[in-house]
Image 1 (spheres, rainbow over the protein chains, first blue to last red):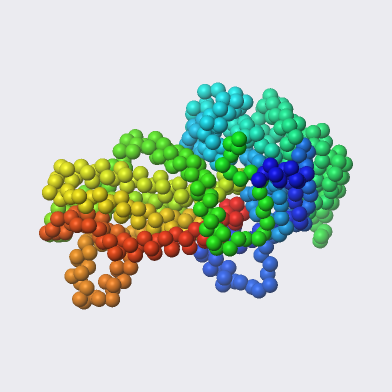
Image 2 (cartoon, helix red, strand yellow):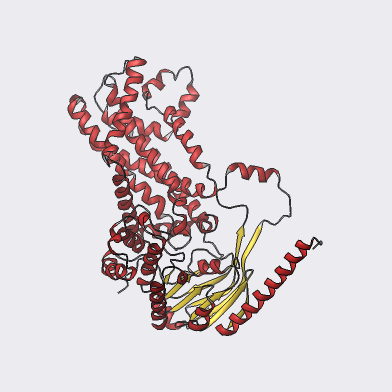
Length: 272
Length: 292
């Protein structure tokens, strides 16, 4: 099915008017007690929802690499989760053509008690890759991650850098059509950072789409051929990376200036 | 050509499929991801065996030690007249240990994988399925002390009816799987499930004919007729009675066949329960990544 679709569709990702709504009543570690309390204090007409993304539309063709930038909490990571199929949109629709690799926060899904090698196979099973295929890839994963004998030690003995390296190696070994990356390029040492940049370029060059969330503006301007700027869940700029980056820097400069002014006001004791 | 068992391309939107479509989806999830389930089961067994000194031997010792506690309590202190009480109680401890570990593992199956759920798209129903399948090992390992008890101490109670054990276990598995789906997804939204289950399971055990037999319930049936009828709606009334029939028999008689009509009814109810539980699970599944 994927092949026929690919033949017809000129895009890898098609996002149409996507919105993601969070229900603030359902948050982490809810208990019955909080539910009852809320029920008792329920007021009508109070909106307890929050839109992390709203009216987001864009298309990405194979071979493109898209940089997603924006301030913290703008909805960048939520966008990646939607693209990975982890979160279903509350409104709008997306189509993704091709295989997505989405170890977003690299290495976070490892089983602490299993060895690195076991985790490679477990990750493979979660990604839906057959055992023999994974066995064939494991050698190159181990080599790329460069963790030596630690590969047969439980993950809990790994340093965070080792964990990130193994995660990156697995995520990029699966030959994805579409690679989603969230702030990975800031992890690890200099050598690994260079290696991972080279690997991302390699994948992008092989006519595969890359979506990259990062704060590294140089990386966006240098390697992405398109960028979008997200603020408070909305796309505020889209287009040439250098332009979008400069818009972002301008806007964040302005908001920083506003904040500084506000701080000054507060410190001066004047009412806001 | 393709090396992937997962669907590569996908579309997602706010539209949710109906109950029957959800059931079919769940069935496809499990069928296409059976290798992942197998892998999770093996990883689970590997971990549980590896992190204790005696490893899997605990799975053999555990029911035996619990049997000893009840034998001392009931036979010695309360001076019950039930003959061959160790075998009598073991026939209930074996399935109950299995059930308890299944439920406990299922409760945590989704919430402990929160990080993975937030970074990877995969059918979440494989998680409680895998823990419930993995828990079967508790039952299998429990058969070792059961065999030892029968061969060493109660040779005259060995009968051909023991071949029905897998049938009874299959019905128990159906019921347990349905419950596993419910508790695993409800625990995502309400973390009380863990606390509630601890007490609910203990009460459930004492209200089921485990320490005492179904015969003891019959004796008080004349004074509390409606209460006893209610007791019979308990799935573990049927299960314990069936296990005990084939393993132990009765105080005076040799082992017999299981409670066939009860088992048939229970498997029907369990299938319906399983369908409803699966629909519930699939309905709330999209919210996991947001709530966790």
